[in-house]
Amino acid sequence: MATKTVSKVAPLADRVVIRALEDGARPAEEVRRLHDEVERLRGETLKLRERLDRLESRLTAAPPPSPPPPKAKRARPVTRRRPRTLRPPRR
Image 1 (cartoon, rainbow, N blue to C red):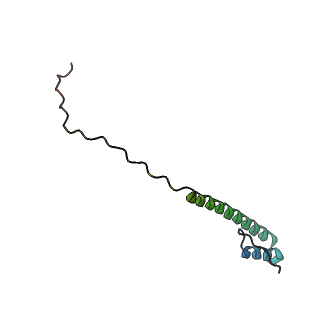
Image 2 (cartoon, helix red, strand yellow):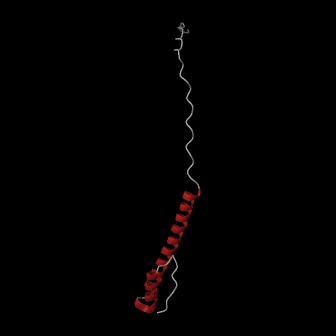
Image 3 (cartoon, one colour):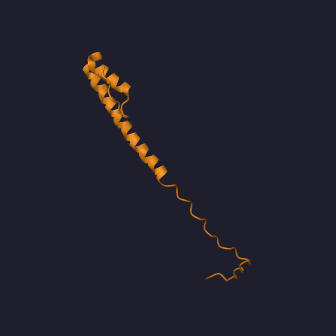
């Protein structure tokens, strides 16, 4: 069996299994179904790796923004307010 270069997406075991299936170990319909499944999984793996790369680049690109400074509170009055004057009720 000739040696093949292995990409990051497809491990050597996948290629060996696909080759064994294509050599006639199982019916053609099942081979096609399994081959489609492997291709789908390769696509998902590629998308997840790209997503992970984007997330990692965000984390290393910029530090998180510092929290905003606390708002200055108004000083409390030293004296108490004058009580309301009583007014007669409106008619």
